[in-house]
Amino acid sequence: MSYLESLRVFVRVIELGSITAGGRDLRLSPAVASNRIKDLENRFGVRLLNRTTRKLTPTEIGRAFYDHARRVIDTLDEAEAMVSSFSGKPQGVIRLTAPLGLGRRLIAPLIPPFCHENPGVEFRLRLSDRNVNIVEDAIDLAFFLGEPADSTLKWRKIADCPRMLVASPEYLAAHGTPERPEDLADHNCLLLRYPRSPEYFWVLQTGEGPKKMMVSGRFDTDDGDVLTSWALGGEGIANRPQYEVIDDIRAGRLVTVLPEAPPMPAQFGSLTPHRRLQDPKVRMFADYAVRELKKVF
Image 1 (cartoon, rainbow, N blue to C red):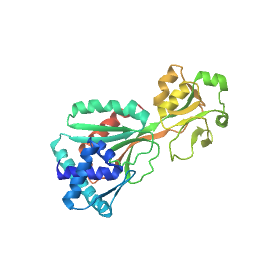
Image 2: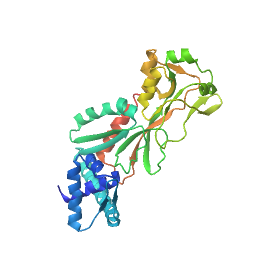
Image 3: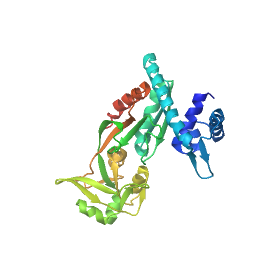
Image 4: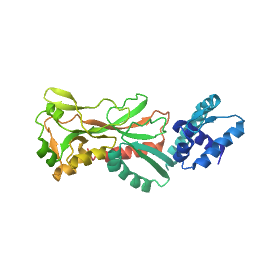
């Protein structure tokens, strides 16, 4: 493995916090990744990392070296992007992330056709309903529902994503159908939560304007598909994107709750890091994805 490749291993180990995670991200075994770090330390005759059984942290010189190594890799990636823009043949890896349900239904199906047209491109798709640090995780393109909080990222709006409150006919027969937003306080609301998530509430569209409703329930999860399955099982009321539940509504498995006061739509778009020159393959896939996704909404 070249010196430059060892630099990439070192950078990813620092960013992901462990040799195992850094190696996995680059498709290397922990042993190989560890050897790459040792090669760098032997080359310079200094310790770059402090290793304990519980924690891995950069030494003072390791932190300084990381800052320079990161800039070297960024510069090289931009140089490769420039060459690729002239060659017209996209090459290399695109790292994507998206929420679980959206990623499974809408993003994953886009990847094989793009790869068939561009055989030099590889994908690393990471799906999670938790917040992802795009910069630290070296993500090239993130699909996102909601309001992006990080102003240092480039936001590209794709569409407004309608949301719906839904429950099964069986749940409503047993517990009654809410007739006004305030009635939600008497129901088991199925909540999307994860560690360090903000206080949960639903914002509904009413004749008086947006209305914040504090809701509660006995079940919460960090997987949106689980919420839908609980709703289908008659466990409560869920707040879901329309594209995820429309087939269940048409089939009668779910019923729209408070259709006159639906949740506020979520902005659906993509996030990319600010770079002087965006990688052409990332731009190509982003443009292709936007064209296809606009057909859904």
